[in-house]
Length: 120
Image (cartoon, rainbow, N blue to C red; front, side, top):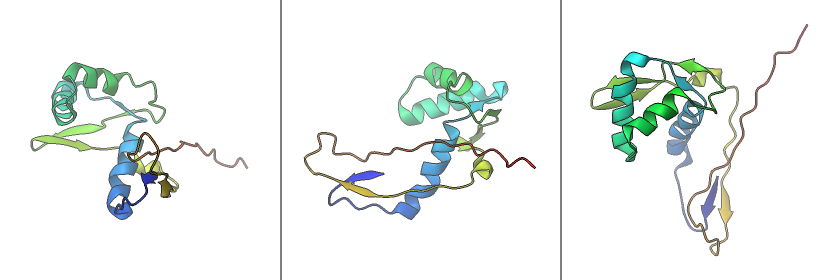
């Protein structure tokens, strides 16, 4: 994660939502009964049309972690359910960026790696 010089963040407070959001991005939502409602709620939270959210939840080209009931309606929002139990390791580092960078916001980069079990 890269931050503009002089910007401070509480990495511990960012870690859980960052990890859950990343893992969720590699799933597809497989509950057709809740799809319209959760798409509407997520769309309202991020100012994206519900139809676009619905399409992304159902046909996710990056959904390499498979289909699951990724979201539940909860109170007035949604509850996310990424398969974070399948996560083996995470490394998050902070790197300052030069103040002259045109995009002075926070930049996050990473990779998803699958580790195959060792064969006997």
